[in-house]
Image 1 (cartoon, rainbow, N blue to C red):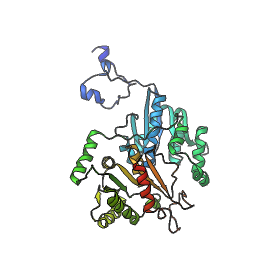
Image 2 (tube, one colour):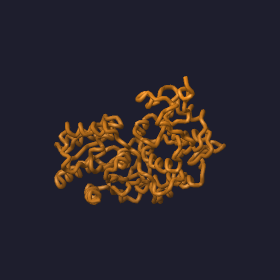
Image 3 (cartoon, rainbow, N blue to C red):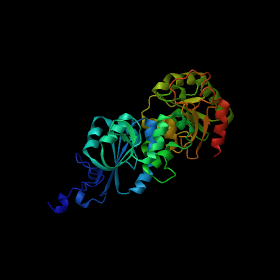
Image 4 (cartoon, rainbow, N blue to C red):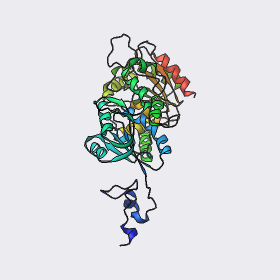
Length: 376
């Protein structure tokens, strides 16, 4: 066996160790003469655990990071539910599930740069334990309290613990995260890429459902996540707006949601009398994205679907009640409809105000935003 045949390129980003890389499986090449050899000299760890929508929008830091460190190998640790978000992501070399393997791998390795963008106790603990030449974002201090690793993270920490500073902020999360990481501004786009097979899957659904894509296709995402139940717009207002879109715009209407929206969407389907095409509430994440890709414009509250639509370069009309509209970046492709109540952006999980912030958003307000956004 020649020296070339004996060579193992352990500094190649495609090296796996426990199994052949994809190029050996596909082409039979070995390390010594592999034309795909891609060495790296700088290792980056990103810690971003919660929630899936926040994980997705944080991918906006990746283009800038790769520009600054072109020879880097990038590892991202997150919860298992968010792993599908990184399929077809060209910037991330490895995604680690949080438990249990990811934690062991993170502690066994030494990184050149470790970035934690969560102020949670768990993610800050991981950052504290990680061995890295430089740390940015947040970590526990020696007393076990969440603290900043660099001065640029101070603003986000203050916004996390002081309601008035959270509400006064006028910059998007993407801008603030880019500052913490040290990326050049403006921030990059959310990274969400569908495969050709996923696009075909969406097209197949559209054909079977009788979707007329010659007409405007407007999506209605009725979910709002679990943490703040008042992020959801009322189903009565949703139905009123949908009828107006169907009658005045001759639009095709796609209805989106997850398992928690099954009853709500069934109510809308029954009373909508044929104006909606139901995309289903039991899709996995990638199938949900493929069907979300069918709409020209999405009407949604502040939830995962919002960030996914932005990542898919869709026009968006986003509705905001208890959460911050300023933190959401639409990249000039949408409009924000913000509750007129003074208590808007309270971040309270429950509310006794009647009508509450989302109930104060009328179908007419959303329709006007929709018309304005569609002309962009």
